[in-house]
Length: 387
Image (cartoon, rainbow, N blue to C red; front, side, top):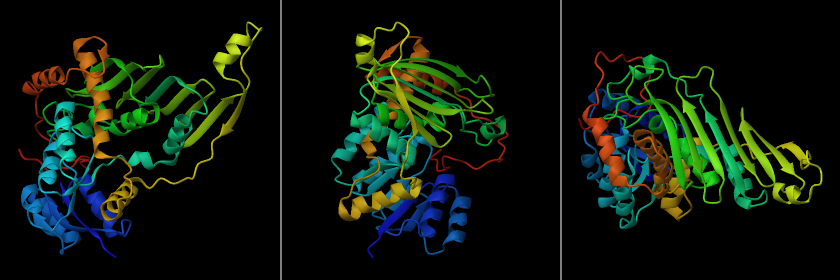
């Protein structure tokens, strides 16, 4: 069997997780041939796992070695576009961990570079493999339930104690991560929101910075959006709620979908609300509905599924779970939420990317790195860093 020779850039928690999945045979068409990380201890850990893997202290050296034809980028957020572009220059296929980057201006550059590279370019949106979200998208996109009227996602089960933020000097800083809960925990949710419901045209948000923790970035978010058809939506998230909630609700002309606690529920109207409203003679009448728990295929292949599709795209031209160019959509939403908060006004999409970048850099300039870092939890974003 032909296998894709994969290099891992960044051997933090996600890099280790990808290696483990591949080593355990979950990705039969991929073999890890090289790993790059500037942290010598990380490289020693990789050597202990598999001494046959070539190790490099720079991504560029690995990409120039001839040992890899594809790479997965699992480094801190700011460097995702940088290393993707280095891959494109060398005609190396690339899979980018979430988020696509920190600001859309740099992701636009990454996407433009990809157009001329003629390589497979994917985003690690593993939540798109989840059976609940796939079914929600299928039902919404089919048109059977009519147009969307309202979307609401309360996603507050991202609780983190202060120890989490104390575990990395760069964590929860403008200069290190470029944001808080929106950039670290919620890229998957923002991607799924737009993947299932489409992109809004207006965004207004209220963000609280360091409300629940000693950090400089947002840890509490309430955002309101409007869609082109007049539908509205809200997105609420926090790392300070215990216990938290994960409830995603979509109201449409002919029904309502609710995802919660690993289940998907449907209330399907016998007659669409607009039609019922026009013909009903009862001033307190409501359209009848049929309630059901929606059956799904139960499959959620997660990271391994994304990598298997990546290999199949390289070897046989099969479709990806998520194309790399799609990474900009969820980032556009988080950038718009930040910008709305910073300027205290509604933001119309597309927004001024230069304005966003300048506002972000103001905050980066005064950003503070933490001292006395406590290594208490695993690093969920990787530790490969050029600084």
